[in-house]
Amino acid sequence: MGKQDILDKVLPNGKGVWVPIDHGVTDFPCEGLANIEQTILDLIAGEVDVIVAHKGVVDRYSNLCKGTNTSMIAHLSASTRHGGKNKSNKVLVGDVDEALLRGAVGVSCQLNIGSKNEPKMFERMGQITRQAYLNNVPVLGMVYVRGENVKLMEGDTTNGYAHAARIAFELGCDAAKTVWPGDKESFAKITQSAPIPLLVAGGPSSGNSRQILTMVKQSMEAGGSGVCMGRQIFAHPEVTSIAKALVMIVHKGLTVDQAIEKCSL
Image 1 (cartoon, one colour):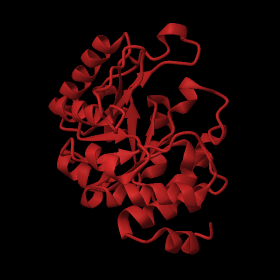
Image 2 (spheres, one colour):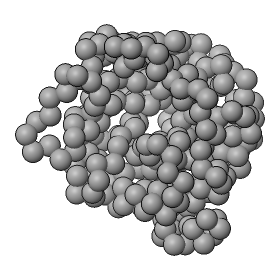
Image 3 (cartoon, helix red, strand yellow):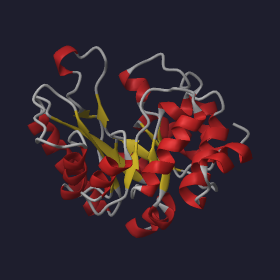
């Protein structure tokens, strides 16, 4: 399967519902990830396009995705809450060849701009996008504005995330995770900053289905391509239902009320 074939599956019509579950490396215990196999089964039942996970999880559970709408992407960056001043320094814990052997169809890499370790993380992302290009597989860029050296441009209502999306594109990522800045106008500036699919994040779990779905609907109306949302989904009281509702909004264009009604949220 070539890269375009993979992209067509994980981003049908350029849109996707992607769920990162890599949080167990950074923080654990983590609500929703104690029984990770059941969480993966719930997400598959919700017909999400992609589950983003660390290589050990991909290796053990990617077989569950066979014959389903769901694929797994390996996240290759890691740090923990115990890292002190270095906790934002995302180091590589694998490479593209290994990720593919373990069952992933693509890879993900994180870069924190504004961190004192930004130069090294740039090199690491460049290394991964090069490996992925040579292997003909897609890369998700998780580029965050996060660190003591962040210097926002005057009047930047995107809080630096238009720049972050641009970096992901220019470094060779095929899609990027971004954040909701609080309004459609500012989010439109982010989506206009890079000609690749931009998937909105969710942040800490709220359990408020309407709030989550409304934000996603607004992001789609402002040019977004879907979601790359972890805790709002896997820590939700009804994992499969919220996943299905997001699929209905992202892929079928349903309204928030329609999705809530159909999924009994």
